[in-house]
Image 1 (spheres, rainbow, N blue to C red):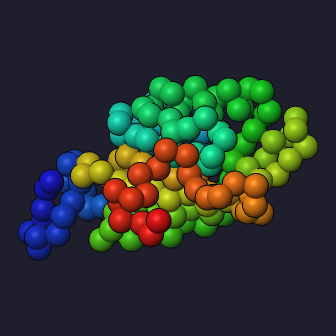
Image 2 (cartoon, one colour):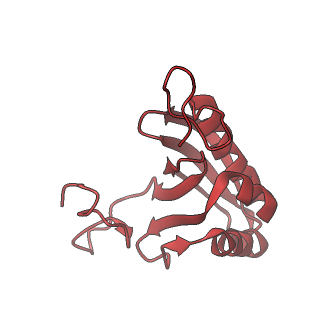
Length: 157
């Protein structure tokens, strides 16, 4: 990890990983999803990205190419697109949160939710955790992301 003259941690390319850079990466991710553009994905996602999904969505997705395929299939099947509503970022924890709206015209649906993004040392997103604005599912004992290591990360279980 690079440091500047003040000792602040930075990105591998020498630029600081600040809130603006994190927000730009999140917005680029949404542009990549909407355009199904692998080159854009590669500008904001680590090759080792893991995208955790809600239970029942066949997750998690590991790697850029599977992410491109997953969201590309959704765009092709449902004419899906996503809009960024707000981004909140904290450079000290290398984490950003985005509130978003998803449009699925062929299904006649609009979904809302939020995602948590973790950034690696180079300033790329290496983890995405998706949360939908929806009712809890009382038919299951635990409502959580499929495959996410809650205990290992220190989350209450």
